[in-house]
Image (cartoon, rainbow, N blue to C red):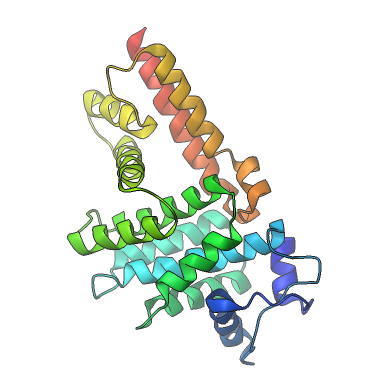
Length: 260
């Protein structure tokens, strides 16, 4: 949690600046009732530094969750519950929860600078493709929180993915895998669970054994908690990544068992 200590501990030096600096400044200002004008960490945390990227990831994630939740004109109880679930999985302390909620509320505001926020997030996350994917998965899950994805939400998610450098086909593949993950976690028939397992791994049911293993290893590598933290995912999010790897492994084992 060293990144958090630098954010709120008064170790000021580098100015995050941009829309993310303004968002985090507003969120921390609300917490401290002081109105911070800018947010900074320390002189060593230049562009690409892990602790800097962690603060950027935290800020962008909760602000975008609020933006997505408000996309259909109202924030549902399910969407609020989704945000609460992420906070619980991260085991945030009360101070962090307050700032996360403030960021969520900032994202709900009219004229939220979504494209500018995503541009800065992409720049700060330079060459951390798996980290960007993890962020996008959390955002998509927020949209799925109420059990369906309406047309407006679909288009917004496509725009977000495009801003982050995803092609339409790449986004469709990610959406299919997340749909499979959601179905895999549900109480469904054995046949439906097997279908969901293939969707979760992003492969067709007629894939050969080598293709299945390759897909499994690729998904495990992309969601490995330690690797994601090393690339800039806040340590508090390790449980989220761990749950994803557990689902990937369970899907792979189910497919192997069925084939044997």
